[in-house]
Amino acid sequence: MRWTCVLDLLALHGSTTPETRFISEEARMQPFYYSPVIALKPDIVSETCKRCTDGDPTVSFNFCMDTLSSIPKSHKSDLKGLALISVKLSMKNATQIKSQVKELLKEAKTRDKYMKSCLETCEELYSDAIAALRDSVKAIKAKRFDDALTYLSAVVDTPGTCEDGFSEGGIISPMMKENKIFFALSSMSLSISSLLAHY
Figure (cartoon, rainbow, N blue to C red):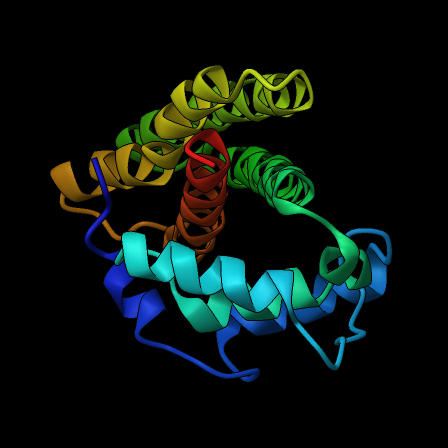
């Protein structure tokens, strides 16, 4: 399923959005994946982002451009290279979110048992997502694009399923922002990989 709450995210554009601030902050910490350098001629990046947004309304053109343009080698890459870059960004983000969930679980030990149960579910979901993203990288490198799409399709459901637990219990999710960002990244990864599969 596609998480409808992400529409709030995709309505936000420009370099000052929470999502692009996230990419910018990561650029300072992870220069290989998140360099703040922006190429003057997007070429393959702008073309790919346009094709993604034309074919998938859940993918934001500005988010796609800001994310991929933060990595200089994206502009010298091909479609397969962009798919790998996108999936690796998603995997790094999922790993960070899993770490955040672990911290939240420590705080939840003496609090509501339902909250703890929801967080444990999210931790498991993101663990599975990381494994699936890792398999996606291998599949793309081996040109098994249909397999990659299968893995990525499951990954896209992760944030929505995580959020469902909180909403069903009538409690505020402490992970909404993180889940929105991951949905945007994983949706972009799926969309780019889909272009690759049908190239």
